[in-house]
Image (cartoon, rainbow, N blue to C red; front, side, top):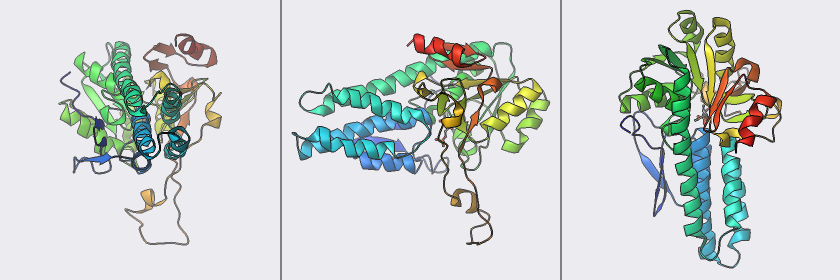
Length: 344
Ligand code: MRU
């Protein structure tokens, strides 16, 4: 597909090649990680980020762990690999795709005979391929809702950089663009600037015109009638449809309801955490104060500190629909979400 050229993760014989998203858009550089420890660090440091991409990276991390542990001692690699699984699991707390992928790889470990690498590599590749396939399906489903719309706003980066490829909400944007939705807006997404550094770069690579706005311009944009939809991704969707996503998503949903703009969450079912009843119990990652203070207030101060939650929870009642590869849930709540569990 011509308008999907970027890849965040590539497997090679030497290990996992990770496009360093901290350095985009000025430097486009892949780094190869040959250990689970390295992959965990790549996730923690946000060289790779975005819920599905984190899960896929962790799956390949398990392959690297198995390679190392089996070489060290073929008789007890299953016990030894537990430390690597724990390391990967501790890399970031909110995106449930990380824990979903580790659970899936753990069940594959149980099915291994002999050298674990071929079996586990196949399992990781399947997770990767299935994510891309799910994104393409969600792209078509989500775009079908945008028929007749002229404009859409997206938040954070949910594209090929954040997934196996194509993207979730940005996949919908790609598909909608092909069907004639040409007013595409992206928020800056402070403080890490996933929108300003990643989304607009990714769209530029694929020749999709877009307009960058400051986060604080979003409500004013909605008032102008330039957009009819907001499409965002998710890091964890609770069983009742409450959705944790990049900080600022909640504010967008509140403003969208006020202005009559429709609000869509796009995520594969691997992002749904059926064990979490509501958004209340989703753990929200807080990152270093320096991410906020560094640029403008870098000197140490005993008076000023920063609060840096990097996700928030949008209650289900502010979400018009959740688009997954298994179908669309309109007006999500516990009952409506069950259709997805039953379709699995
Ligand atoms: O902190 P990040 O960049 O990992 O946060 C990413 C997001 O919040 C995305 O919207 C979400 O993971 C969905 S990506 C398809």
